[in-house]
Image (cartoon, rainbow over all chains, first blue to last red; front, side, top):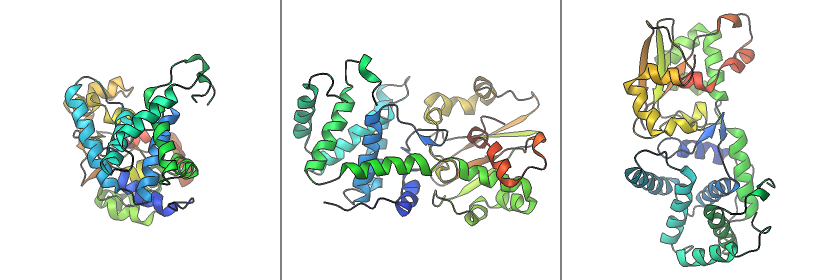
Length: 121
Length: 195
């Protein structure tokens, strides 16, 4: 188990520098903008894995930007859904590192989708 | 979150995120409480208040104002910014004749350390392209009416240089303390889509 400190002031300092610029997440009135709970989980997972040294933020960001560009090339008139691409990037990176292969993720997702209603959030 | 009973379908992304988190926890790569802690940390600690404090200081302290406009990066170093370091910050001042507005035409470069995370419209392709071509029209659409003779300057951010607008002090704010003034500074004014 990787230890991640909870108070995190120094992590915030590092992260604020890392997160700024290309591929920065959306925000409203100084708050991170999450339209659905899963988006905040995806963001939280990526930051925890980064702070734990599983990957460098630059590595994640490069892939994120390239995925955003690819999406924008295909859909010139719409704004991209940031966290859709964010989650896709996170799963891609973890699959590349062989930490969470796509097949495993697909099968778990299928299991979850088969749950009866009322167990899905 | 219990309001979604009217919504029978769960988003595939929500299932995928849940599946991913469950697998990563099983693999010992993360713990759920660490994810919770990160979300809380980011939600509460960042935001445009750093920028507002800087603007308020510039309104009450002419020497600081001059320094800020000459060398923004150095001037803000005396503030204990939660937001870490800005590579190079250039602060541009509004006046009765000049209005400044900031964009990143390439992507969404933004002075995170002083303004927090960017608003959603900042990354919108329409804002990014149109604010350069027709700033007056875009600002009008965003609710900002400028006098016809007001000169508009558009600043294009990059990975190397970030811009922040120093708004004019509201006329009715004379005599306020620095802290009270900071309350009056809006994020949108520091981007330049409000006065």
